[in-house]
Image (tube, rainbow, N blue to C red; front, side, top):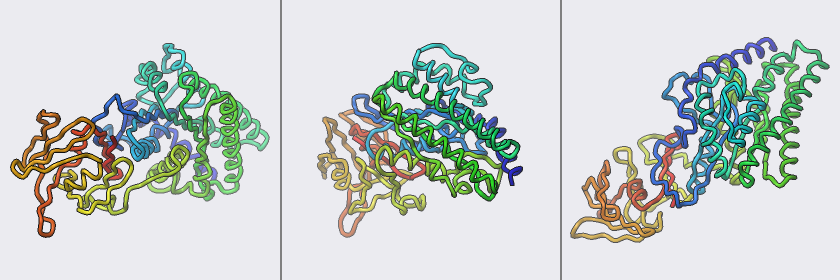
Length: 430
């Protein structure tokens, strides 16, 4: 069994060399948000910056198509942020990064000093590393403005030791483990201090390190490696406690406990395809839940009906409330339409209907939008704005209801509109 575990770890390490897919460094919403419109700089925005290794990057084996974008824990956190208001994400997860690399990188960001890829960490497999090097001034600015900073780090520090567990005596294994723990403690604490120097106020959530192989693959060694992983959790807890004593809010996301006993379903270690220690989609959701519950006390998902089929109107969340309107939304040409009265109630706007012009006038926050039945333009503060699908009348019982394009109207009124294709949910925030 242990030889199988060794092959698993070796395979997972080599597979990281294929990651040219992870393009678009620092993309604000990745594929979680196919549409993001109307971001007003004057509005309060909850800003998330994700740092760390390939788990932060959202890597999964098989990502060989350059058009494929990851959907990891960070992208899910962005969706959770939308439930609570305007939110943005920048993701700087670096493939193969160790705690020493994170220390070097955050140090350069803090100091505003030039750094090379080799200066961060020798031999990093991430094809985007030169972009990361160039972005240090931008990252410093984003860290300074962040409300939440998330970190996953440590897996690349211990994978080789875990690989050698059968070949080492208990004494040698424990000796090397203690050195790894000491290095982890030193490097993570220094990284947190670097981040704190940039932003003294943001919440920092640091994940502990899960042990990825199931008992069936490890046999008698499972308990030994689980004990080792628990020591890394203890180290993360101690580092966080020491930072909190110094006045900085650092919280540990206890991911390892959620993976224990479920490694087979939460990682790609077993199953079809090349074995890999990275999380599955279920694994990334599990990590996101731990982070979200620490930040917001909950992890929300839309109704099952909205996620069931593309023929059903998507879920619509306005100001954190999932809409359940008297008149059913209508999906037309891939867009959601709501009855006029339902829209007014949902966004808290004022409106009126003009029978002569077959148009609705909606007002909110000093903005006015006029939508005319059948027109491929709406007027926003007197200016024509093109729309793909016009408003229409829909027979409901014995009366005609005015159905308006929700996203176009919300955008015209100055709302922030984001769409998650994974959740089939539109998030609308003032």
